[in-house]
Length: 59
Image (tube, rainbow, N blue to C red; front, side):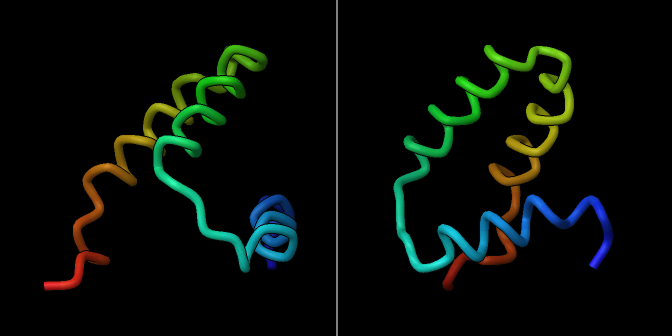
C-alpha cells in the first residue's frame, strides 16, 4: 500500500459495506471543494473520470 492509499483504505474500511447514491457522492465532493478549493482541479478530473468509466457497466 502506498502512503497515498491510506485515505482510500480508510474509506473502504469505514464505508465499504454501505451503498449510497451518486447524488450523495456528488454533494460530498462539492462540500469538499468548497472547503478545500486548492483540490478543485484534481477532484474535477476524478469526477470526470468516474463519469466516463463505462468498464463497470453490466451489458
